[in-house]
Amino acid sequence: MANRTYTFRIKLKEALEKTDMTQSELAELTGLRRATISEMAQNTRTVMNKSHLAKVMDALDITDLNDILELKVEITF
Image 1 (tube, rainbow, N blue to C red):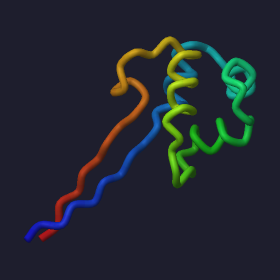
Image 2 (tube, one colour):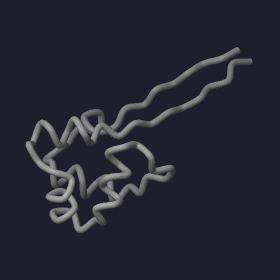
Image 3 (tube, one colour):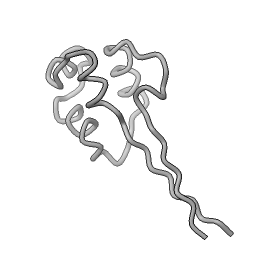
Image 4 (tube, rainbow, N blue to C red):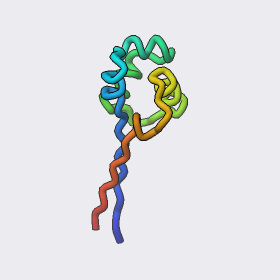
């Protein structure tokens, strides 16, 4: 039986570069703590709050989840 490991990656650094926005500016726009934005950008958060992700997507004018979130699936036997 195959085992699957799912890894989610938030592509926040890339999205910020595209919009020429800083993490501090994003924190101010979303009302999220700067530490939260930093953890999201570094992919060190272990839990992703859907409302936080929605606020980030709104602030960056992202409508396609694939533009901000990546799912990697590893299959082992």
